Each structure stands twice: as structure tokens, then as C-alpha cells.
Image (cartoon, rainbow, N blue to C red; front, side, top):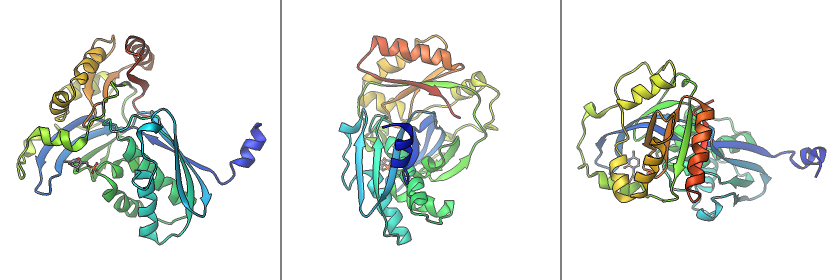
Length: 302
Ligand code: C5P
């Protein structure tokens, strides 16, 4: 198909990017009586993503393709379909959509792929169906879909507290790059939180992320601050999935790696670099040594 025919065929087609969510720091402040944990997390959205597209249709359908399509159920349980149904239920909209998801982010891997897809579906279908929704109304629809879905609606640097719904936007992050690595292990988030072993009602504000202006001069300044923070889910995730040790060791061994850490409940780990060239070089070296791992490099934001 030539470019003109492509454009004609694509009339009515909307696309939306679903960026990975990276927990630069994740402190668990306490465990609530409803079983959820209160967090204090600083989150970035590097330019690594799934892609969604949709065109008008009488019914609601989802097709999944891409490297991680096989790991995903495209049926009614898929977060994209659940997001579309929640949007219809909240607004009374009766429209349909033929949705396509290109799944490039590993599934159940601590970088919020499913949450990012659900958030992107909400943004995209709001446009496709011409819905007039305030940001707050869209957040309220996103919340019940999962703890990380409201923050993925923003896809910009932020600090999230509580179960992740209490969101504060942060200034732009300094120029930096990340390498993301996953050994293709899948970790179930509830199991990682359980292994942490906090009792219901156990809460301590002193566990919060240390105060800062959250405006860092450069990548080294950001990394120096990150050294004072942690991911509290890293120790339990490492206990459940020993391959994380090897991934962190590989990242730490790379020239230019300022800090390596687990994201979310894992098993994806990341390292921060000052320079995208260095990050790309490190990613190529790791991919070469461990072809079975998933390895990506990208600007930290932007
Ligand atoms: O909301 P979501 O479906 O992403 O959460 C999955 C599970 O992770 C929850 O059922 C809960 O066990 C755990 N979780 C938690 N505290 C959070 C977020 C998730 O305990 N803040």
C-alpha cells in the first residue's frame, strides 16, 4: 500500500502510546487493613512503550500482536477491554471500537504494561467517542482498574502516595537514559507484597521518600538522590525470583551505570545513565551476552 492509500485507509484510526512506568524509588510506608499497602513512589515514564490504535466499530473488540502478545489474554479480562467497558458504563456511551494493541512490554514485569495499556485505552476512547470528561472524572474511572492506572494516565514524572492514587506532578527530569532488563521471569505483585511481611495496620511515616525539591540538576544529581532511596519490594522480589540478582549484577557492571534497581514488584530492573549513547552501548552488550533476556534502552523521559 502506498502512502496515500495508507492515509485513506487510516481515516478514523486513532493511536495512543502506552509508556512503561518506572518506579525510580518505591518506599512502602505501611500496610492497610484492606490488604493494600500505602506507598511513596517517584515514577518516570521512559520512551519504551506498547502502542494502541482504534477505529470506530459497532462492537468492542481487541486484537493483540507484537513480541509479548502470546503472554496476554485478549478476552474480556484484558485490562484494555475492562477499561473500555468501565468508560462506557461511567458515561452511558453505547459506541464500540476495534482496538489493536502492539504488546512490546513484558507482561507482569513491574513496569506497569497492563496499567499503561488501560490508561492509554481510556485516553484514546475518550477521543474516539468524543466524550467530554474532566481529568478527575477519567481518574475516577481509572482507579478501580488497578493501583497504577491513574498514574499511567499522566505518563509524566510524578510522585504517588497512598495506594498510588494520590498523585503529585514533578518538574521535568534531567537529561538521562535508562537500560531496562528482564530475565523473562513473571512475578505476581500480590506475592511480592505478601513476602514483605508487614502486618495490617503497621505504618511508619519515617519510611517515606526523603524530602527534596524534586528538581535535579543533572543525571548525577538525580542518581545521588536515588542512592538515599530504595525499592522496598526489591528484597522480597529477589527472594522469590533469584534471576533478578544476575540482572542487577549485569547492569551494575556496565560502564556509566549510575545506579541499578528493581522497578515495582519486578522482575524488570533498570540502570540510570547520564548519556543515551552509553545506555545504548550497555544494552547492546547485555543483549549480546544474554540473548534470552529482554533488554531496552531509552531516554528517561521526554
Ligand atoms: O491494584 P492492582 O491490581 O495493581 O494490585 C495488585 C495487587 O497488588 C493487590 O491485590 C495487592 O495485593 C497488591 N498491592 C498492594 N498495595 C498496593 C498496590 C498493590 O498491596 N499499593
